[in-house]
Length: 307
Image (tube, rainbow, N blue to C red; front, side, top):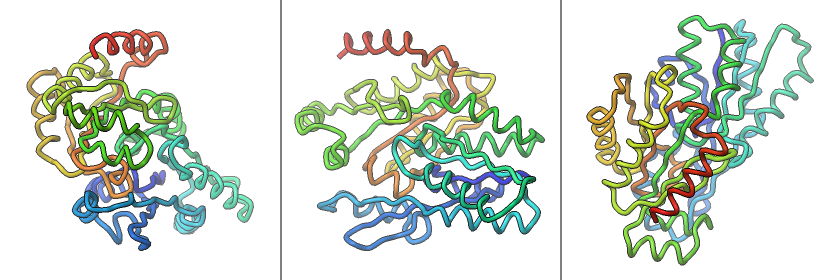
């Protein structure tokens, strides 16, 4: 058996976690000086119900190396010797660092040459790392070897395409990710920034006015970028508005040739505190050429002309 481990920001559903026997290491979130364990002490809806009324944004904390070591020890005792740990981007959190420290500490205490642990820096956020986790689990269930799974993750992790639109600009403003001027203009014009991941951190790639134009952008970019050979499912994420996500799913079915599964999953509390209310996201595997430096430069120039 190959054990696949992820942190709680992968935001996969309990059904998926159970189906593929995944191990999840939770982050923590502190609200008004009280600390909760992600998905254990607080649900996404409980966070979103109070988010707009909070004067200060909640803070989030990474798991300690011991959280990973505990899983390694328990599984090795049960005969599991191969581990793949997929974490959120090292550019946005210390989770990946914690996992790597755990690996070093585990092997310092245990002389086990037959145990293999590979740590994947997904360069992704939320269901982006979740996409890698799900894909890896599916491949393992279908009989892929440990080497094949490691190779897939390292070759394809930068091809997992993210799109995230933020409905509530207040959270970006409070977290320092958007200027006062941009937030005020955005609210007046009903402009929603659309973000993706570049070099492991979030980057605004477009701005659209209103939900319809945001979803149209998602669908058009999917058509241009999707790698149909590797994208056998799509994940659509949302924070507080599931209808927004369901509308995107309907548009994909209606306007594209995609026939695979489309999963709608809610973003968890530790992710949602930064995304805010009304966020919607989309994840799939794109063709490598569509995120080349030249392509991104051209796309950026075109986008600036449209603004």
